[in-house]
Length: 120
Image 1 (cartoon, rainbow, N blue to C red):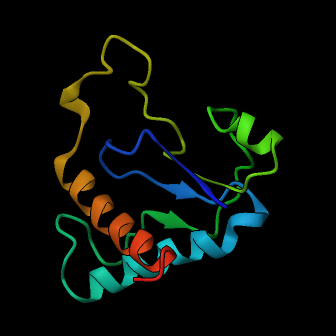
Image 2: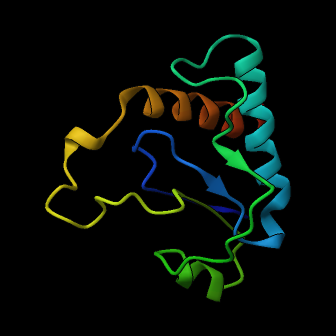
């Protein structure tokens, strides 16, 4: 009952906003997961006062791979870095831009989110 699209999540200091009103409760769960992991000291190279997930910014929907799901009425939790990294879709869009600590931190947030989503 939910499609989670992960896109452009590996750049340093990504920012994610909620793109659809019908997924705000799940976006809130990502925020809570990040806060709990911070409180437990389980996120590295990421200051506590900086959040990956921002409710105070509204950028509207982004055209992406989720459109067919939206057309079928599936709620979409669209995790895409906004604004887009400057190197995206250029010759500089290489593995060197993947920030391993960000990937590790977001993996932890998503594991907590998914565990709670399926009721573990």
